[in-house]
Length: 91
Image 1 (cartoon, rainbow, N blue to C red):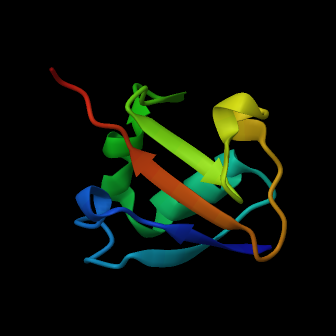
Image 2 (cartoon, helix red, strand yellow):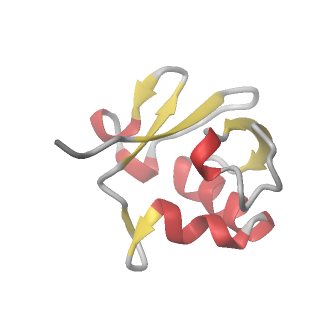
């Protein structure tokens, strides 16, 4: 199934400047894997190591943070809107 993924400005380099792309999958992990298959350079910005989501990146499904749901196993359905949001850190 296809979902829309909103790409924030700091992560648009790997997508060639696209602010929104389509990806396929039944859960967030599959959607991200499909996104990485199309735009490989985005992986290093989303993950720390092989499987752990970068702590400075939040992913939302229909406005809900996946960390408060089932993490990368959060189910998505056709037409859902996935938002990737890099968090700012500093002092």
